[in-house]
Image 1 (cartoon, rainbow, N blue to C red):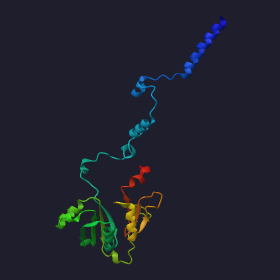
Image 2: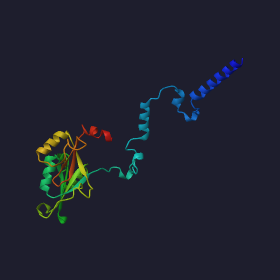
Image 3: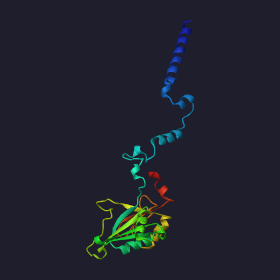
Length: 239
């Protein structure tokens, strides 16, 4: 009888011990998500968890990841757009040849400021056949086009033996970097540039990041060359 009582007590203690070891800690309903309560035995979907984590953290362009970013532009800036980038050039004959013949741009407008002895050349990828004939109207038309290049020529630099050129921003002290041109095919475009004698900073098959290129204009300003077929894959790891 004593032995049976000892066995019963031992068995009860064993069951109690197993219960304490195996049972999960008690969680209040308020600390559980609805999906956990309704499907407590369903295995976790780690793919959904990763997607949820990415969605909850937002994209790299979110204000949380970019201090100082305003996502709602001031109403006063409605209608603003990027219109021009200005380069000072030594010789307009050489630069106009490069931007029109080599890069395929058109001269949208020329402005001569005789009093200050300089000329402005506005170039871009626009159909100049639609430009107004009136010179003032053409100025307004030009300034209404996005992403133009403004070449500024201070008279006389092309014939000045003492003139040493302009800083391109890519040597110390570094500042301005480059502009970018989208082409149909980077490799083919660069083969053409090479045939035309264009100076390269980086060819498509050079450097750690391959697939795009950098060339120089006659004054040494850098121009990035890329196409939409490959730029996504080139920068995928950084996206």
